[in-house]
Length: 402
Length: 124
Image 1 (cartoon, rainbow over the protein chains, first blue to last red):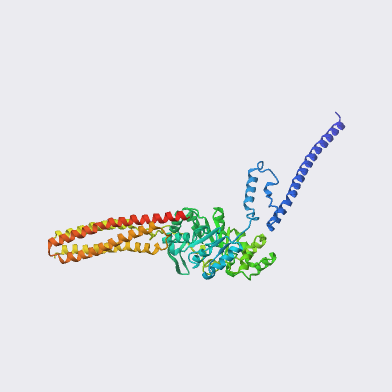
Image 2: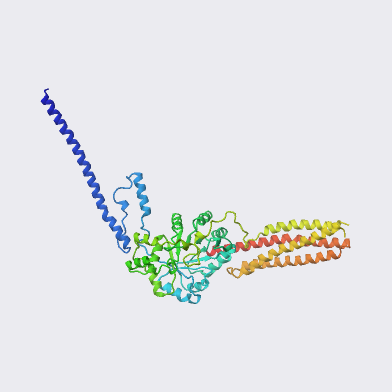
């Protein structure tokens, strides 16, 4: 074979190799292009989601993007894990459902309760929040007597923790036949606030143990993460009621409750009026053509509350507070509201009368006080018997000594 | 009276005093029930049991009074050995009933608790 023939063969082989390489490269490019087109196809779904979130009344439910591109059964475990995580984080919670706040009666004059409750029921409220120390619970019970509402929340004051049975019975007797009754402990128990002891002798753990033993849905209020962890060893609480608003966000407690399926109920969503003229809240309200109150109630729901308590004696505001289902606060605006956090409010709450869970230290391990409703009569009997023996001995000495 | 007898008598008086004080605790418990019984859900059985508890507390109170009277009688009869012996035995017999009554009060108290709890569970 001469030199020319060899050169021709080498050139031919070179052309074939280049051809194969080019064809492989072309194939890769076309694959990439096809996957790119899939991504592009998925984009309209994303925009649909945004529309649905911003307009909860939209008829199309939000599409779950995790279902679209690949078959979940054939995807790798890592990919499945990623999708599962993204599904958990999807803020699709109750987007298309309707939020109906509960009606709180704190600080409403007992003489006005009848009218206020009648107006609230006619406005559409189906849940009512009360407490044995509000001073108007009996009037609420009378006002609800002729109506059957969905649920009534009531709280037991720490002064009754050591003898909880009469308090439970009073609540049951008051609201018998009015709706489902949820009884909660109002505070974790004894604590020291600004140098003075609040709720002296109140043992939250013992009270909760009795509550959980006696009723099927024991609930609590103003309990922090450490308190919830402790009482969950007895029985998981049904609900925890805490103050939630941009000043007091309680993110950790909400996260804890969500993770363990404990319902979160928010009180004072309007931060006791301290945000009525706040420029950020006013700006967001004007953007949605809503009132400041509506924005703050919606904020509490989007922050993670399952139930939000509202209170007003004004009929038009009662109706206004229910009109919170046709808008959603955007993530950007939620971040702006979150920026209003005020740690100084933790001490006594925004109302300056309701200490936050952070004020209460963790439950003491060794705190076990005798409950007066179950006095240690057994021990008394034992001591009486021992004393009787000593009386007999002294008596015999008296008789037998000359 | 010899020192031994004086000490024995003092011991007897102290013990009856302590006994009275502890029986007073039962009255506190019963007072607590009386205060709360109006708050309790209307239940005839609870009212009946509380009435029984009150009756026991009345007996115990009477025994404490009788014990103090016997102590006074013993003091005045210390020179008469036979009379002292009778009074001391009366006192011991009287106070021997106390623990049984306390046990009865304890059982009643448990029954009341049981009724109250049953009532709560029925209404839950």
